[in-house]
Amino acid sequence: MTPDDRTLGSTGPTVSALGLGCMGMSALYGESDRAESIATIHAALEAGITLLDTGDFYGMGHNELLIREALQTAPAASRSKALTSVKFGALRTVEGGFTGYDGHPAAVRNFLAYSLQRLGLDHIDIYRIARVDPDVPIEETIGAMAEAVQAGHIRHIGLSEVGAHTMRRAAAVAPISDLQIEYSLLSRGIEAEILPTARELGIGITAYGVLSRGLISGHFTRDRQLSAGDFRGMSPRFQGENLHHNLDLVDALRKVATANGASVAQIAIAWVLAQNARRGLGIVPLIGARRRDRLAEALSALDLYLDDATLAEIETAIPAGSAAGERYPQAQMAHLDSEH
Image 1 (cartoon, helix red, strand yellow):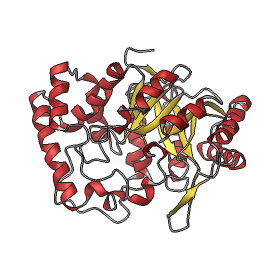
Image 2: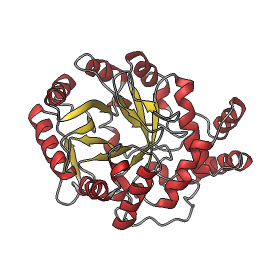
Image 3: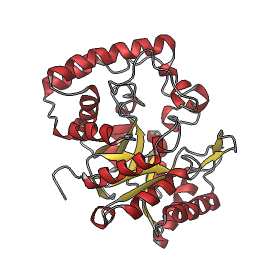
């Protein structure tokens, strides 16, 4: 265990301080370069990142197959340390639409079987339903995952985008390693109830969206034209006046970053990293780098030390609740147990 490693909750695995979110290599952000994606995964593993996060519905299995290829072609030393975190449950159409989520026990076993085959693994390290199925009690879904733990097919049970009440219900059935949920300078709603509940229950946090899908990366411009199939074209925070307001916040953050010899992305990631100590629980940011240069930039956030004065300046630049627009379109917000 290195000084930068973190344990996910009281029962979860020890992972690197940053994880690699692989979704953008297969879906929702337009075209990606397969060779560069694999090279980025290799570079992440070589740099000491151990946690690779995916979902079986990212590109309808494409992302899992990509990770399989990356792991099979990575040096043995780094490959042996890789841990997989997989979300399941989303129902898709041929055209790529989402039609809901299935958390029935039979569906859990079915999704798991396909993921193990695509990944070429005999187990998944952390397995979680992407969104709560409103037609299936969470106890039944978690119970099926607990059976998979007993069978050796998964090592740890995780949650995704659930609120405090659902977290308690799930933890009453089986040990929960971590909650994967959006957490960034623009998305701090979990601080009021969800983070304290996770700390109480001994559940870690894997934070996605730490750069708000590139919005606070420092690389997104006001005149940027998004490609077809890019999720951000439908995201409220990237629309019209919302976008201009949010990029004004980024401009304020840039001043703090520059004063600290850092990029906007680095200081935004470092802020989430700093919450690990401030909140008293294991918080691991997932960085969604699709290219090696973006990965290198993100990794440098590990070298940033933010004292209390700098943290205060960051939070003055982007105050809690200052983002314009919801984090998902209305139809998708309805699926977020964490928002109810």
